[in-house]
Length: 128
Image 1 (cartoon, rainbow, N blue to C red):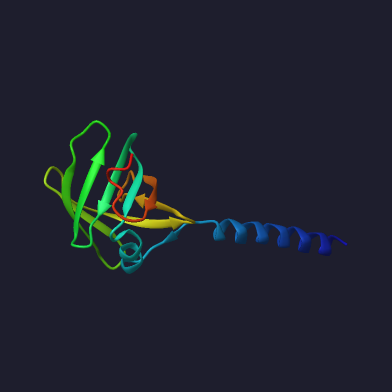
Image 2 (image 1 turned 135 degrees about the horizontal axis):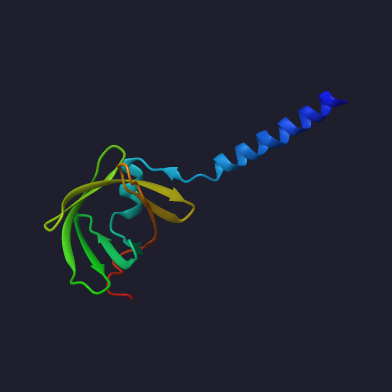
């Protein structure tokens, strides 16, 4: 009888691990990142500040954050990351994950953080 009880416990534990793993966001490849954001607007909150960012097909990007002037920069993807360059801060690259319809930016380094955002179709910088 104990043998069957152990089997049931192992089955329940294993099914919990499998469902937890399937709920993890998917890390995107560079091609998947480009396909998702190219020509579109991302809307979210970064470090407590609301923003909208347009990713133009020509590799330029415009960033509107609450309380600041619009910033223009450049964007591109590598094999597995999104990268951008801004005159005020230089180059930075991020991992991008997809959690259902939510885009997740993940910073790198010792104090890595994640920031969720939504992707809106087309140029929606002005729509607030």
